[in-house]
Image (cartoon, rainbow, N blue to C red; front, side, top):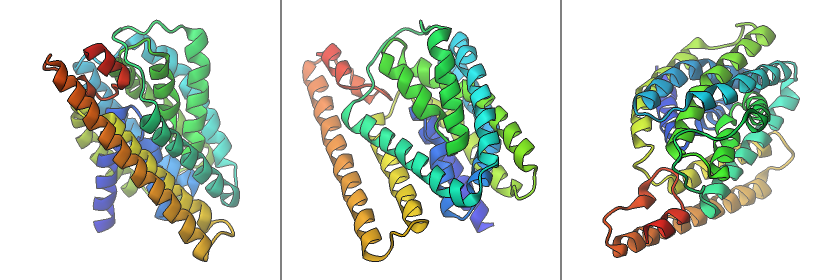
Amino acid sequence: MQRLLLLGLVGLAAQIVDGALGMGYGVTSTSLLLLAGLSPALASASVHLAEMGTNIASGVSHWRLGNVDWSLVWKLGVPGAVGAFAGATFLSQLSTDWAKPGMAIILALLGLYILLRFAFRAPRVAHARKSPHRARFLVPLGLAGGFVDATGGGGWGPVSTTSLLSAGKTAPRTVIGSVDTSEFMVSTAASIGFLVGLGTAGIDFGIVAALLIGGVIAAPIAAWLVSRIPAQIMGVAVGGLIVLTNTNTIFSVSSISGPAAVAGLLAVLALWITLVVRTILRHRARRAVVSASGDGEDVTLSAVDGPDAVKEAV
């Protein structure tokens, strides 16, 4: 019971991160499930089964708040589902000896991407509530994001959300809401792929239920927080946690142990803490600049606003 309660809290925290950043549920949950001893395929299968429910709750919440562009949802989600099914089928055929370090490396790289992305280059700000992107951009993006998501146990948000935000053509809240909503198709396709490849043997539906309940509770909170929290700080904190967790997994399945492993983990921890402190200080400095402008609106509190928002404000 205590284990299921803890997993429920993991699902709740992961969904708050995902709903606010447009990424993080899969990589956060899968990293912790791997740490708990699940095989890569079963960890990814459990997370994607739970995500089917949390994606519905998150999509509805974002839709009610006007954060969804349905054209973007379909153009991104359908190819994403194709990529996810292919990725789940591929992962199901890999042996655990190869899959565990492979998934840990993918997750660590995704975590590093999130960490550095929010620490050094905050996404640009746009205001269009309808995405101007066409299928020739969204189809390959969806295919790649879906495949990485299934094989890595997460990655739909880091691939899709950051690519769309980097383009700077669509309002951040629309990008996050649309990517979260389209993820239902990705999670469903990945789940079908895992069930075809693995069957139901070994899947602990108690874990799925705990993650699902926590995520559903958090979904409306996350959708509301999307425009009210400093995502730079959250992105750096979550990215560092994912890197640290999966670095430990990589060390445990490799020949790195003892003092070398401790030194490596301490180096990652020191870098993480340094970047968190740096990001907090920069965020406070931007708030001070906006407050000094006298317009009374702290645009840096937006979920994905960056330095460009400060330039606009002043």
